[in-house]
Length: 56
Image 1 (cartoon, rainbow, N blue to C red):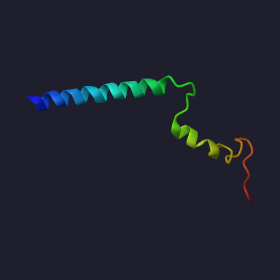
Image 2 (cartoon, rainbow, N blue to C red):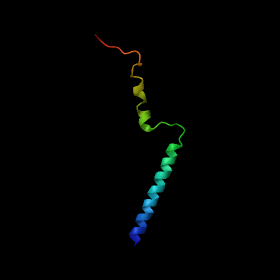
Image 3 (tube, rainbow, N blue to C red):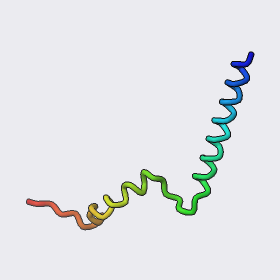
Image 4 (cartoon, one colour):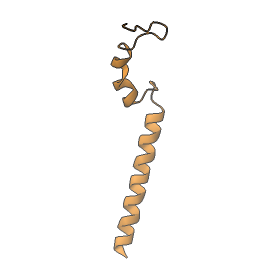
């Protein structure tokens, strides 16, 4: 029976940890994720939509 108590305690601890980290992420001032921020340097390499250059 002690194993069940430890299992339930650890499950609740992980659930609370997940909830805290989730709400901390949602309330950040900057609304960009780490994936979006890592792709920002690539935005400068893309040409403007109207100025495509083709070599003929």
